[in-house]
Length: 324
Image (cartoon, rainbow, N blue to C red; front, side, top):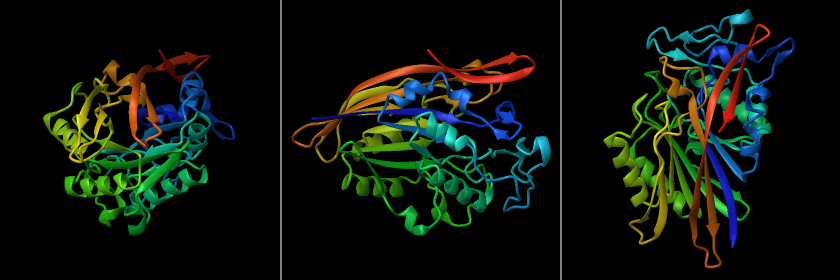
């Protein structure tokens, strides 16, 4: 029997105040933010997060927005047309995430086009530089149609990621960003099932600040489970949802434990809408077993709550992710 443990967290939303707190004379140092929670991530064989920022660089965006220079270069701006905030982060975040134990990121979310097409590609380049795997956004049509299969100690994980939108920022090539298109999603899941032992869908969906899944979310998760998905890892509401699990037979006759985590909350952010619940997240831990007959299933679920803490220390703002 082969046994692995995987971890999943929700939104990593890099607000300018957090970036500013990591500023050093020679760059940025994000590792202290994750110091207390890193041991819990590192004890897993594989760790997944939702990267809700970009590594667009301090240069021009495709649509002509110039990132501010000097100390304010990472300050959020508003898109001139959509008026949504646009995010970018110093590249130093990527190695900090790697050192903290992360292996994989979903890049499909409503902020993935904040740096335009060039920013999207640069984000993938930075992740690749630090050997962080990713899916949901792509450099090429070929990449977009290649199934993401990751072997972890003899168990093959199939992972797909999708977003409800891009904050009305146009995507010049439809294949660049995976959208919540059920027919496309089911085709992807079918391809993953043919190669993987266990299938995970990372979905950026739902209603912000709502503490339970919408009817549309529930229907979509049920559809995916019927077609063989084992776990849904959700993000976007910015608050925690209950994690639901149940044994369910899919359309292929396989009875497996299905895990519906429709929102894992915020792993890193500042307080949003003056709502303290937006500072809460969790490390969802899934134990996965593959028996001698080759049957793979989720056998145990654990949840460790986390809270983003902000303190003032000698005139400096310090952010930390605190595990319960």
